[in-house]
Image (cartoon, rainbow, N blue to C red; front, side, top):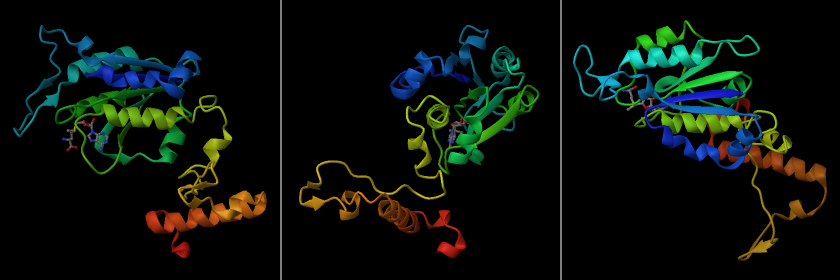
Amino acid sequence: MRIDVLSIFPSYFDGLTLSLLGKAQSAGILDLRVRDLRDWTSDRHRTVDDTPYGGGAGMVMKPEPWGLALDELASAPSAEGRPPTIIFPSPAGEVFTQATARDLSTRDHLVFGCGRYEGIDERVFEYAATLGEVRLISLGDYVLNGGEVATMAMIEAIGRLIPGVVGNPESLVEESHEDGLLEYPSYTKPSVWRERPVPEVLLSGNHAVIASWRRDQQIERTRRRRRDLLPDDED
Ligand code: SAM
């Protein structure tokens, strides 16, 4: 998969060279390119923002650098002939979930546009829709200073679902949100730590009993912490 990121703070993304996503890039599974939006400005101050029409507080990101950047990075279809998916992180967008991550992990080419200030001139989203599928996606119901942290979170969640990125694909199947429930509790050695024993059932070696206990734990934990995830009849 190819991922292009447009940001006025490209160094935010240095962390994505580490760990599994770093290895995925070295292995050629993930082609991640982070670009400075200011490279598409032409004035001496490399200006990317201006005052809002209609008045109001703060500044708005100008459309011109975005248009030129998208023309360069998002106008060509992928090798498979599919247009890019262009994602603008936004607190006013659809909420990002594991299902969104799964869906986006099947795309050939993602382009992330990180907003700053009061956000991006609305016409940029309309123009982007002429080049590919546009998604405005929120990390949650709170406001960040910019789209960088949201983009990093999304790239990590999407990237680990690309085949070959996580060594053992089995470990992806049993995780929180994959089957609509939170994950069961995990333990490792020693079997007793600071007078706290590991639940006896996990030492039994009986796989059927362990699976049933884990399922019960998932339901119980989800009921306690995230009742909203359970269907009505499991309330
Ligand atoms: N004025 C905007 C509003 O009220 O919807 C908020 C702008 S925010 C200060 C600047 C940028 O941060 C946004 O353009 C977006 O890229 C990013 N951002 C802020 N909160 C976010 C969230 N919850 N999810 C995703 N991106 C977010």
